[in-house]
Image (cartoon, rainbow, N blue to C red; front, side):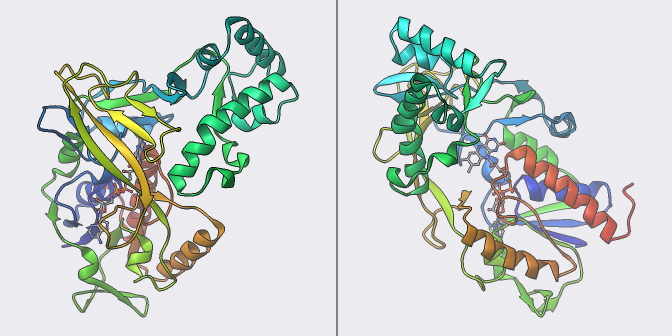
Length: 387
Ligand SMILES: Cc1cc2nc3c(=O)[nH]c(=O)nc-3n(C[C@H](O)[C@H](O)[C@H](O)COP(=O)(O)OP(=O)(O)OC[C@H]3O[C@@H](n4cnc5c(N)ncnc54)[C@H](O)[C@@H]3O)c2cc1C
């Protein structure tokens, strides 16, 4: 073995491929789960519907080179994700757009509000909800307040496990409101789904004679760090170790544990054509769950019945079988993270990459970009030119 990769998600698999293919290294990937693909794992359920085990994943990016990379390992189809929210029993698209105004105002009021928005924010396709809340025009303000009270504050509170009163409107400074009828969820140029599956992509990605994937291995049962040196079952390691698991766990929680939100998925199947209008719909006014993903629409699958997952946010706790999904980014958690980061920098053959190791909420394209950057760093460290 010339290099050890911990984790067979996107970051670990991309780096393993580079080491194997470009640098000719023999790479072993240790994965504690029993499958490849990390959180992008998908599979056909017993009703023959392709579902995503860890929540809905749509690949989207502005960068052609990242899309091109994904195309090396499987075929993709264009797919424009649409999402919505159920408010007062009515479906409306998200990000909220002019349709939302039509849905909740009389025709006359709706026309008036749309005109006011166009006037106050002329030449803008989107504004942020915060801008709308701060608008001078009372009708725009009132519209934004309605959305805040009936959607954002309720949804955000459930998602992060706090009370709606604690949600400060400033969290909405990046949340868009569309000033048109555009109903795509993302604006990125490349928005795709695999023609076969994410797992097919990962099978091809890790299919290289220099890569061996071992499942059911928790790397932290074998790897220890002492005096800035990595040990594998007691033996000092000099090969590169690429770690994509949780950074705090790598250092045995020395500076405390990093906070994450987790999710519980309740899987259901019904013999109906359609459960909801869009593949992903938020239910802000429901007490416990945040959203439902209906998989036959992600992308469209011609099947009888429908399978969907109801998402319940919950606290992540090590050892209680929950998965760390969303890093909770606070001043304190950043402080803790930076302590781990500083410590990791002292270990010359250790490379951290991915949403757990970098303690960042990355989308897939960001993880890919980061992994490709780490590949270059390793290559430079080994004084090797790619073939
Ligand atoms: C609900 C949800 C929806 C999402 N939707 C989208 C989306 O629509 N679009 C998008 O671009 N991104 C989305 N993402 C983000 C996307 O999942 C991530 O960007 C990407 O999967 C991260 O890849 P990764 O390799 O960093 O981490 P992971 O996929 O988590 O892979 C890390 C792997 O390391 C393994 N591991 C950890 N510790 C150890 C250990 N000690 N020993 C052995 N193995 C270990 C884990 O089991 C895991 O398989 C979503 C994320 C979530 C949670």
